[in-house]
Length: 91
Image: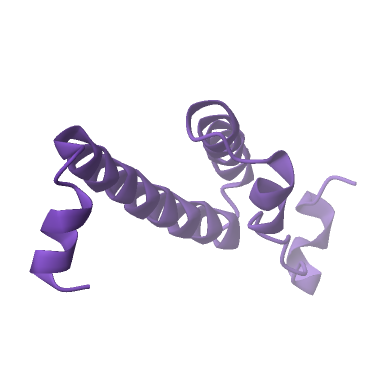
């Protein structure tokens, strides 16, 4: 979208432009959080990754008015345990 088009779009509602900037920043931060959760899960820091995933879910549902189903779709999957580590996993 060209700058002139953007300026026309927000001409009647200048606060809307600022709100969109904050919304975009929040989306970017949540994407980074998704990456961190996946990374922590991958290195088997499961308690931390689960706590962050729970916080992410709360942020999306309560603060950003998103459905819970969308949050669950992004949830990291549990990697298969290595044979030598099989006893560490809880069922």
